[in-house]
Image 1: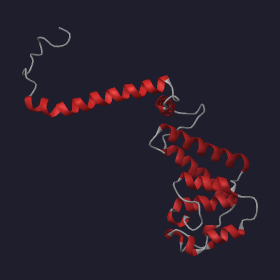
Image 2 (image 1 turned 90 degrees about the vertical axis):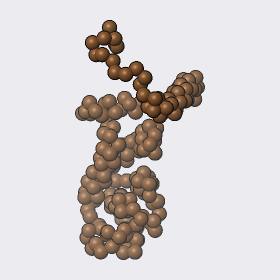
Image 3 (image 1 turned 180 degrees about the horizontal axis):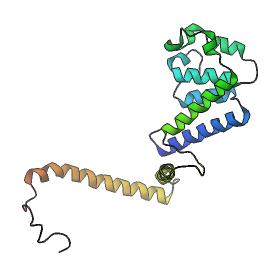
Image 4 (image 1 turned 180 degrees about the vertical axis):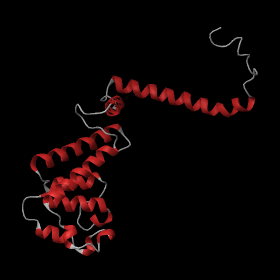
Length: 192
């Protein structure tokens, strides 16, 4: 998803929604926890979380933010056989932090994910680089199906064809040399 402008924009929107929900309500619902895990490319099934340490922590801390008692879910998730290899020997106190610690870790994680995608945050505090990146992202989005979309694809196809022809001719031109020798800097050329 990170290879395409629309995919990046979708990820950014999802992370912003998760961040807003956590800041507004102070917790994530189970579907939000599953979404956060999926955004990392991991499977939110309890048996598969051990394959991705970050996804495991997102799930664990996401459950840790919920206001209702999650003892059974936390016990199932923190069983030694279900933990990632790096956390198998961690004690129970390390795996059950307070709600505030869980919330702070998740907000930091979201900030890191957004920063990794090039600082696409909105608002007046954005740097010039962020505003430029946002403009580039908006330009990269193809218009919906229609005349402009077909025209953009046609021009792209024409450009690619010309580029590939030029690349095929490049070795031949290099082998033959420039053919005119070096030009006297005082005579001819641009601007004379």
